[in-house]
Image (cartoon, rainbow over all chains, first blue to last red; front, side, top):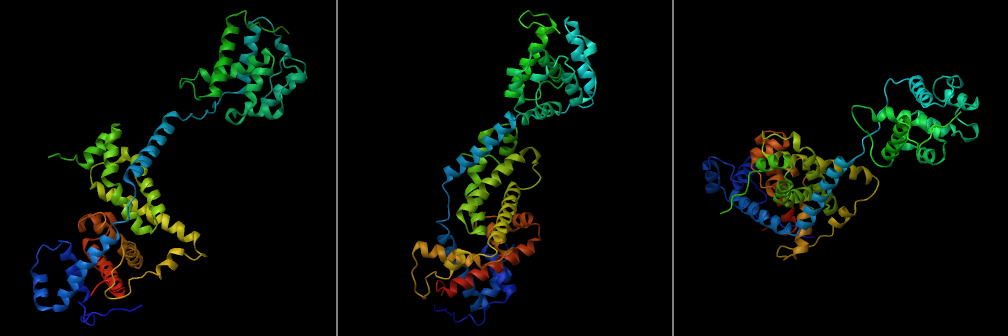
Length: 230
Length: 187
């Protein structure tokens, strides 16, 4: 590779003069007097300016090929924006924790509803917290038949309100006895009664609505949903 | 003669849900943002992705934008940040690998004084010359040449005094001039 030396390369303009000429090239000098004086007295400066102008021309000629398909780019950007917009608008909101609602209250409400419907002996229900209560109730031969009780894992998912990560709800709807569904319906009813309205969308909210409907129809004595007898 | 709406008018329309106004902004600036990013990244693919990221980021930030500064300083400032982040990530990944672009750069022709380069060869030489310009000189130079910004806008974009912009651009030009001279493309 041969390196070309310009006759004036040995005495190029100093950095200050290079700055001046570069700024002049960009039209950034309000007073051209200084650069005009330099150009009139320095052939090196004139040569340097000429090289800068040619370098700029070459630069833009060499960069002509640097381009993207504008319509493809615009389409990709608009598409991504649209996807983000739709994702934000259609995103299912997370199911909130039912802050501060004691399990005993929910259990009591469920039990009272069952009692009001005319079929359940309250004394069979032992109010102990969470899973222990359910397990003990089932084990005591109450209204959770022992042979149909749900697994600890599934029960934990429900008690933790970890519905989104659980596959248990469809199974509940399909397999559990109606009286047990009543209990969970009471839980769902509590969710739907929230002033914030339904907090989920899609399958899980649909299931909750079904349970709530079941709950409501039972309360109002819909014969389609007979209340189980003890 | 059709008068194009001001950038901030388009921003205001986009904020109120006018998707076409946002599309006009994208059309107006996507080419220069892409070329600016390509100049920093030396990669078409990365530049395309960063350009997309830049406009998507702009869209996300629409509600926070107020017409206090030139829109282009915000846009290119964001593009530069994204591009430099991408560059940093890429360099981390390539830490122990040889960059194929660096190897290719040593084989660029046009080494005789009277050489007449093909467009492809010229593009290679310019790429090579640009790659020898370090940051932050390169950003200042690219904002001038690709975004056609004046020095005051570049200073605002880079967060430095106008005098610094002037010296950075001059330095970048000198590096490129020397490289083109070395390649025989300048007398």
